[in-house]
Length: 122
Image (cartoon, rainbow, N blue to C red; front, side, top):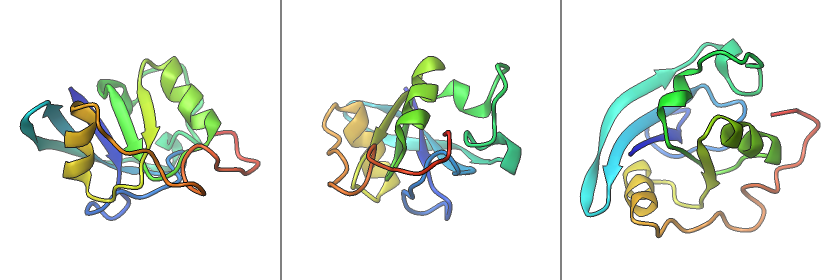
């Protein structure tokens, strides 16, 4: 499965998924080391915070998005596109992709993740 991971620095998992423009994309299957297949470096208007079109989006090829933090709006928008969005406290992209593929990804610690509160509509 294809998994997109928010990573503003292309090294670790970062947060605020709605405004993220950089993603590491992995192919991951249970029992196999995930393989990086793409890096997305999107223009600002393609961040999910800014993107309001009904057309295709580069994240549409992913089955899942993993991030340190995301608001409920981001999670809903991903679900509407058929993409599972999940938060985690894991910061290593390869380990997060492996754990997700194997159904054992640890959820975000309290204070991170889906409890993000702001006035933005991501």
